[in-house]
Image (cartoon, rainbow, N blue to C red; front, side, top):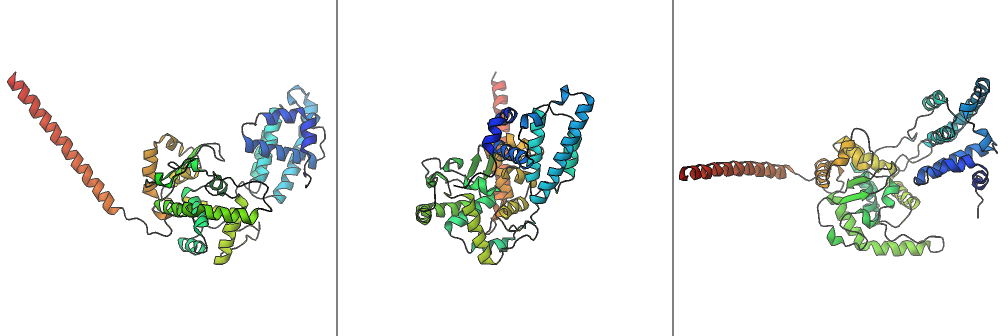
Length: 379
């Protein structure tokens, strides 16, 4: 068994301040895990053994002592910030900065706000540095020509929901309205299936949908799901430590999904590495980008993909029926294999029905007036 790179046991055992701080994040598992890693990594790499003495309450320090302490702390934090910005891409440095900032504030080490702002502005940016590309519809068709029913359903599902690959892999039958634990594909007999995630990366619930095309591919996959599970089980029976989670829609881990997608891209001739980060420019995240760039209403697209912003906050109050309508109205460019549905005739029919309904309402009003008039005459 490989030894852990960072000495979690030592720091958690010897630092009461660290234990108490992490305890406040026990109900936010991913944040708890990230903060624990980055704080212990920072202490260990800077050879800080006595964390409780290192972090001080600046409220009780005299002026000279506080200035010296904060100057030294600012210098050390700045040097480490420069170091991790050279070593890591994406949001990693910003997660560390958030962890150390919250840890210091929790322990009453104040007056470093200017430093936090300065470091944030001088970083490489909190967006991924990989030049991820968004595929065209024709490129997607080429990629999917090397798929099987499972991989096609998996990645189309990701593309039309706008979710991260980790969220899709963790999708269970319970997340799809009409399937449930004892799933029955007959219950998926409505046009725009609803997907509900009670948890997401941002901490909010996510309500999204899939297209009729994706539903068709999903049903085709479900007919053969047992075959794919059997094949994967046999292939990994000597290597796998954990059993496959059969309640998941796609029983595999994120690494397996990424490998499948990479193989499809390589077969197509579209596999390309970013020269700076050495990561694929057509990774699975490009499917999320495709959704965001092809869903007609951008703010609604952000909402369905799990990007909860101040602008789309109101959509959380929408009924399921209203969300169904919004998704259906804006989904046309998400169809890959089937032609975009022509809803012109449907819209004409709706307009006609509205006119008929308005005429019926007027006729009813006229009839009521006549009845009331007749009653008045009889009296």
